[in-house]
Structures are given as C-alpha cells and as structure tokens.
Image 1 (cartoon, helix red, strand yellow):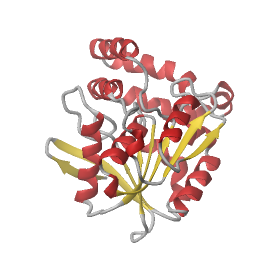
Image 2: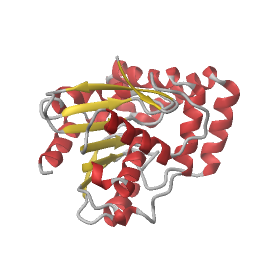
Image 3: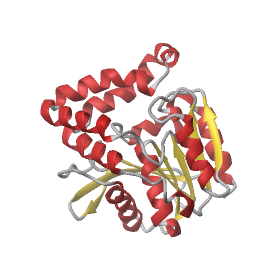
Length: 263
C-alpha cells in the first residue's frame, strides 16, 4: 500500500504498468475508490504507467473536515504528481473525477498531456439536491451510507446490467457503504459548488468527453455541453448508466486508449 504525505494527511495511491511508460491518472467518482477502475487496468497497464488514487475523503485516503472544493481536490492531484516526480500526465476522471479533470484543464494545463472526462458535467445538480443529502449523511452516519448504497444501484447501472452482473454491481456499490460519511458529505459540497460552464473554453489540451445513454445523474446533454465549448474536443457515448467504465467495460477502455494513443 502506497501513500503520499500531504500537508494535512496521507493520500492513498496505486501504480500499475511499465515504470517508464507515459503516466495515466485515473480519478474516482463520488462514493467509490480507486478500485472502481479495476476493469480497465489490464488493458491500460499494457500501454501506460497507471496511477490511481483515492480522492480525499474516500477509501484509504485522508478524511479532513469539510466542506471540500474541487480546487482543493485538484491541488491534491498536483501534490501527488509532484511527490512522484511526474511532470506531465494523461488524466481520466469520472463524475466527480471529471470535475477535477475540468479544473485541471482550466487551471493546470501545463501538467496534462490530454484529458478524458466521463459521465460528468460542467455543473452537476443543484443545491436543493445536495444539501438534504449532506444533512442526512452527517446526521445518520453509516446508516445513511448503507441507504445510499441501496439507492445507487439504479443510478449507477441499468437494470439489465445489475441483473446480469450482480457481483460486479455489488463490488462497486459496496464502496459507497464503506465511504466515510464525513468524507462523503464534504465531497458532496465540492460537487455542489463546482460550476465550470463559463470557463470551459479555456481548456486547450486534447479532450475526450464520454457519456452514458441511460445516465440520469449526468445525462449526455451535459457531455455535449462540454464538448461543444472546448475546441477540438471528441465525444463518445455508450449504452450505460452513470458508471460507464464498469458497464461498457472493454468498449470504454478501447475508446480511451484510441484517444490517448493519438496524444
């Protein structure tokens, strides 16, 4: 198990793939950990040095008092790259990880070789959605996380996928129940407050936007919004709900690899 010390705690990360290959950073969604990318690792690690990490408040990483901001989470990524002496990397983030990717593209493009944002939007949801969730999680703690896990199956996967692959769906949704309530609530606030709609045009690095046709959390319209405002951005869509990397599997991996190989 590997950790990088930050000013206020430790960030948990994992490296796979050839030591001297280009680095590809993978950033998890809200309520998961670095293992949400397990299905991608065999293919990605053939071509890249794959760097996964648990976002602050998740998995084995530090849990500090909230609320957090996407800028704070983006600066954690830069601190991780600095600690591992990585000057530039490809970055792929899903949902909240896609917000972190947008922040990096806007504010730290010199550190990026290319950017992939998946199942995300320039603004995700409204305060009227996030504030009651934050209040419930802080009030009810682990019980609220279990309830969120049970409700997340329908948001994260289409019914046919969760019925055909119950073990895969359970592995991912169990991550939510295991997430720190304090860390989850703090990250909910970061997602709630993020709004990059007016800044997207400043992203100049090569960009691929991926959406899921059945994604009710971040519908394809949000992906199109990003793609239309970033010059030269590419777009791909898969039959999937919110976690397209899990549901689309190898098709997702192949599309990302095709994009990365060009940059």
